[in-house]
Image (cartoon, rainbow, N blue to C red; front, side, top):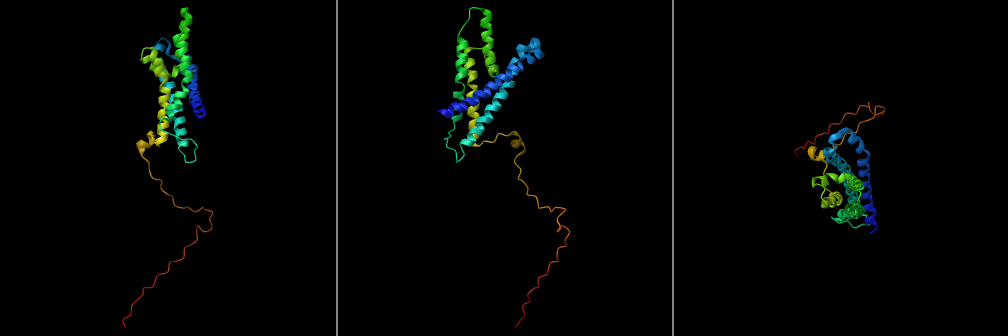
Amino acid sequence: MKRYIMKGLKILYAYAMAVLVFVVFLYPFMGITKEAFNTWLPFYSILTFLFLFTAVYFELKELAINEKKPHSEVAPYPLKGLVYGLVSVIPVTVITAVFSFIRFEDPIVDRLRHLGVNTFLGPLYFFIRWFNEAILSYFGAILLIPVIAAFGYLVGYYGINLSIREKLAGKKPVQEKGFTKSPWNPTLNEKKPPKKKKKKNVNKGQ
């Protein structure tokens, strides 16, 4: 169980970094989009989601590869990435649930609560927005994290190659280069002795 918690914390850390990126660049993004900020916000969310996807995907892919090595003391299985992901989103789910269901009498404070939840789920907000911020969409968005973790782990577990570059170009065999002598090699200019001609054996008739 300790390993699940540790790996879950790594995924949670990746999510925290994605949220930090979302917050840091949010104000410059607001300055650029101005009145159209609300329209472009889901696209900004997608950009930070791609950051999250990349971090979690490669983390879990590498983890699966390491766990499948013969000397590994950990038993891998295909859906292990999903379990890691579900463990990682427990804190996110709890915080979202608490602040989604509580209400404040002051409309300004309640509005700040709502904006705080949306910011906390910034990298996943595009999903929430597509469902018009329905309460279930918040928890559906959180489940995207375990899905990414499961996908990355499966790719590593089965050794699937998803490199676009290699898929388009194909793997080319590496050609072996012949040995090239150094220009300072004293044998470079030596003349090779002429090959001796083999004498043909002539069978004489008795």
